[in-house]
Length: 106
Length: 116
Image (cartoon, rainbow over all chains, first blue to last red; front, top):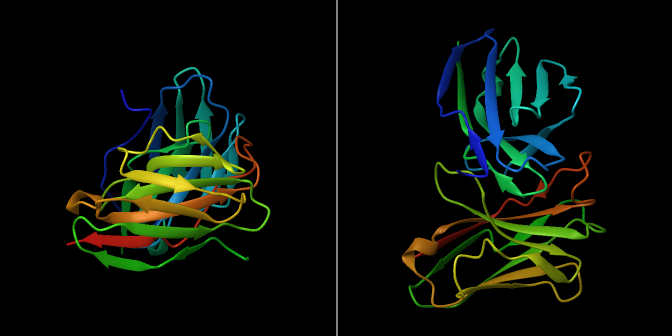
């Protein structure tokens, strides 16, 4: 089993839709988790940390489920500009998932 | 510096040649990471430095790959006898406090290596 696995993409959604991605991890001792966004031919950029209690940043909500060992990212009211690849990373392992590609269409 | 700087941005080399890729992390960041990314894939972990020492080099694919960080700031990734399969974007990232949930990685814009 890979250390970090993500939902296979691509996700194609209309503007305004709500979309969610999951990311599972294998190391139960992992303590810190992040979501990154990567645009085509650009470097990954930090989107948000994932806290145990769940956290929200505008239209984005991140959650952690320790029992099932996954994190999730929810995007509400999706915009065209949200089109990108979303990567999760388990900080203690320094391993990234393969990424989930999101395309938001008009 | 203000961000993570990687040079060169692009490197084309012939199969069998030696290459060096440089990473200048954010000033004060003690943790430095090298990843490589192929098209359509996530970043693949190569090596992690904490200060001058390689804390985890388990991602280096073979002994042709080596990295150093002699003064705890700039790092160089060295690839000997390059092969076409080494072609990828090599990303460097740095972090202020590895393991903290408050600090993620800041990436450089990468070096695109093409082995012909």
